[in-house]
Image 1 (cartoon, rainbow, N blue to C red):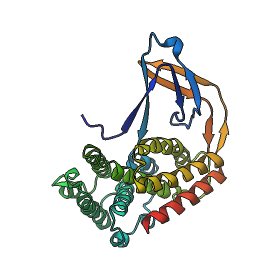
Image 2: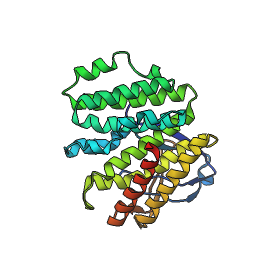
Image 3: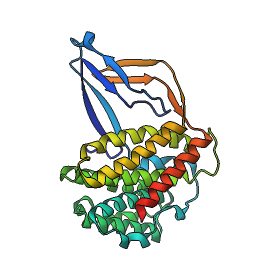
Length: 296
């Protein structure tokens, strides 16, 4: 059965030793560059798995739904820019951006603009050769759920996932990497600009801090397609964002626990990265810079 809520990649590692560069929980717990010698447990564990997840834009915007804020339409990429995206690389990036915009808009219900963005995504999907990812009755489903934001949110998430799955199954890894990278940048751009002033207790600020780990996972995912020039450029841009996270956020060291849970390596502790006012400003500035580059 398809999991429409989370995309998971499995990184299999040797039982003799492993180098882990990312891990943690929803509170930002991180494990950094830990060498683990598992030779002594070789007889019990022949292989271990580290799971990393790359969420859909909807999962980031779920906090927006819970907060009950008002929609700021000016944050999404204008459909007037649609004609600027001609090359396959540009279309894949735009598809990811507009998909994130749609996820954000789905928090607030259906309107004329929402339908226009969905139609644009359908058209671009056809141009990218992934029309099979869209249900024939997609627009009817949206219109019939006009007043149900939860259903629209689910439909938006499903559309994104089906596009992901279709690209993966049809050998379009480069396009998929560009879509996911652009969707991440647009989602982070929107959520950063929803914060008017820093407050360490603001759940949206906390969510922004969590994106450091998400970014590491995403870079792990797209590294497979580095041979593509567009993906290589996207990777370099996202590494520059990763550096801002690491330099600007506060790091507090703590002890590290390593447990084996049914053959899966569970890492906890090692320290945590915490948001601060400078980090929020620096991350917002950097993601805005990258987003402006992508939407041109």
